[in-house]
Image 1 (cartoon, rainbow, N blue to C red):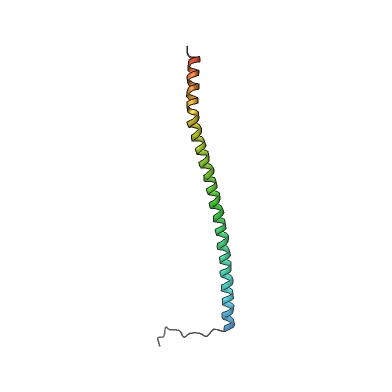
Image 2: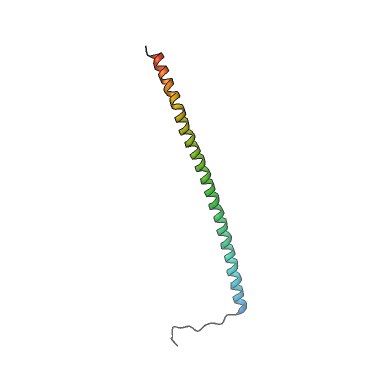
Length: 86
């Protein structure tokens, strides 16, 4: 047998069960933390999508207003030029 090789140690069954319980409770805690973090990221994502939707709506309304009102503004400028300039 190689001198670097360790012989397997016998583990007390009650100690093994204690470690299993600690490991299981640790895993449950990690799982809860992950679930909480996923919920926070979901909330951030949905808020971002909502804000982007509001921004897109504002841009579309502004562009539509410019397209619709530009002929009206052109007509107003022509009327002002006719009345102001002799």
